[in-house]
Length: 332
Image (cartoon, rainbow, N blue to C red):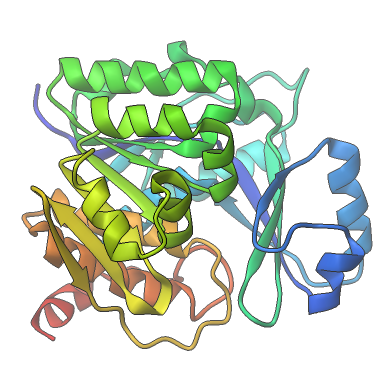
């Protein structure tokens, strides 16, 4: 089948509600700083009440969705499987993704029932983000929502680890991986968050070994997954599990493991104000590179550059495409 897209993404479709807060707000709200906490609507409503009077902004989000947008802003293409409700947040989400250049094909679900998922993202002055998420109807994504004909038109299938928290979303992920294998589409997975490794370590190790051509994680996730402290050691062990792995390490750049070899790729200087979406943007930059003729180290360099631009602004994406910078970044 003719390839129409670069990447098929699968993830929780979440509207991000972004706010800047002082350091003490995290403790006052009883939150685990830097982590994502799943919440009931009443808990999330309490946080929104606390934020009353502050400036809030909206963006279509979710880990894999942010990655898909980064692919489009690099000059690539993609389609996305994520479920939203037929409500104002759901309509905003689909239009925002389409405006960003990503086909969001899962239909709006009926108004009755669960609302569109939302995540209140609190950013403190040290640029750390703390997420308070109600999954809403995104948690009802099923294997039937995976369009295998569209998937077959892609070079890569990319799945986020957050989907492992629900039975139906996990089945949707496995269906996507199965269909990708059947269609000779490469597979990629991101571990998404350290708390997921606490819950699903064995599953994630199995995924990396048996289902994935490429995996993404940050240094903290790698330490938890592989029981090692040094990121390079983690990368060397990751190379034994998966053909291609990327471990991000903040301002130190990232480690690339391929064919049993590990290489560190330097990061770019950045005045970080907000880390929301940095890892997602890195993955998007890498996947764009891998689907447009860059080798893994070159793709990692583009991913590092993209992430450095993201952390210099508030929110999970840039305001403009970055593809015009690709040539100069590769030559620098």
